[in-house]
Image 1 (cartoon, rainbow, N blue to C red):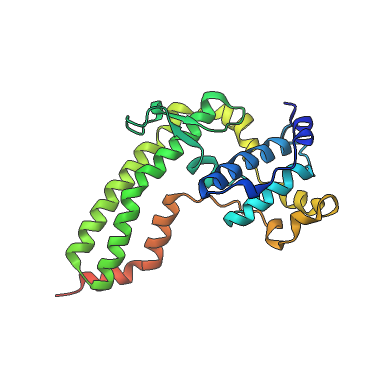
Image 2: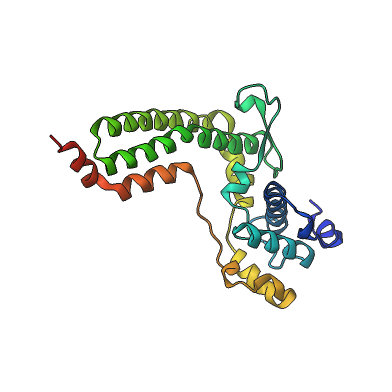
Length: 240
């Protein structure tokens, strides 16, 4: 890879030209991929410690506009990073392409696109969760049962879809190649060092705190069920 010379030679991009939310999300996608490619280009043991100014400034600016951390996050890697080959056909892995990619070939493609389909499978479950919460507040047994049945079917589909990782992702390629570019290690220190190179990057202290959480819809299911708690559900089913 020749990332350093490319990054240093590229012009300083002006985010004012990004007019729509879609354009800003695509910009964050590309810039965050470039950032991870730059940091880990020499492998796991030799990460770059300072971003070039012409990459760091637009990344942080568009991150602030979107309320995202200046790093590759799940919403970049998965939610924004796909496009259908044929919009008229179903959203299946054979009809999807990546917008931006790292080294990793078909295994990277499979890893990301299976995650896209997991998010799709979770949509009915998220809707069912909302219905379940409403049913609890209204103390409606029938509505809660129906919502939980739809949630069960969604979780089954999520599990089935996630199982496709075994079909599309080579674990050796994931560990030796893909995993490195998804690492958040050293990035907090990198942004702190940017203070000397480029003070504008770290005006907001939150930029030095790297968010490594994965925003999977599965987490929403888990958190909602825990927060509502079994006691609330028991109170509904205890009605005469």
